[in-house]
Length: 233
Length: 201
Image (tube, rainbow over all chains, first blue to last red; front, side, top):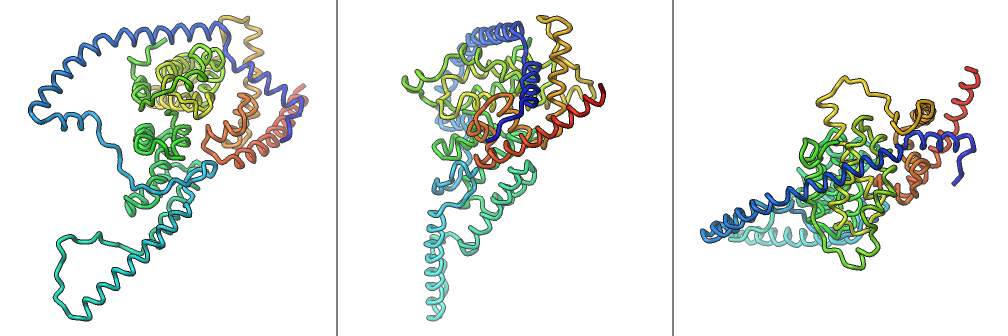
């Protein structure tokens, strides 16, 4: 990688110096930070007092059989997403479709074929069509075609993210969520949505989306990118 | 100086403080720097980043304060998986976003002050610093925004390319490519600027 010319480097160095605050500002801000920290520590006393009230309320609620509901109210369940293989290369900025997923998809397609064959056999015997008690999960369309569509939407979102068209990226991701709420790439979609919200100044809810994603997929390779994009750890 | 935990923009901070917590091992803790070390080493980086990320001149102290309050609260959760600068940049970006929103909501139309005047240096020095900063910003404004961001993080903040790639959630090779192109563009802009200065003289 080439270095800057001496003239350009001089402009950079002088500009950096010009943008850098002095020692007094640094001390002043440090003092303010310390004050804030001290203030918030002092604020912990009433918080502790109120937590006793909460504890009593929790016990009362528990006696009435409402403990579960109380807990749910405080800590809502994270957004559920279908598990998929975690194979997205970190440097490829999410959304690559792993081979394992494709393999799963092929198996799924065979299973679809088997079920369809079963239906034909019933029809051939002209047996009365009795609806089974447990209805098998409806299959909207062949899995292969679904995955291709999922990939297309996520690639569209990825292009949006790279070109900073965050609204466009989110539109593609919403479309994915509408069509494939529990799709094979739901995890990648949720990570990309968090990033598209966090990186967009005009959007809200990025942190919430990021925290929900991290809570649900703490060990996902995508977690690192979500953390970096959203400033959460 | 404001208390970020009490005023309006503390909302984002408060959310950050409720981030999930992870048990941190003693070994991990040993390699993670103490708050004061982070402050001393990265204060300027945070301050400049906040400015570059659009925080108003007169809110820079407050924004930087907010960032370090969050850092203090969340340091025990920091596992060191990402670099410290990457982590700080993420927090700064979020705090800056919050400040920009508040400004756009409440103070639309206000003319920004030119800032950079400190009580600790003389007027001549202030003028020189301001001019240097303005020159750099003028030249940088000629760059494509995405390249500019990479360039600034590399050349002004002296971050490594992998750190930048992580900060911006951009592919490593893309980051290298952007930096290479940004340097070329920056050199051209410098040449144009120097030529213009010579003509004026």
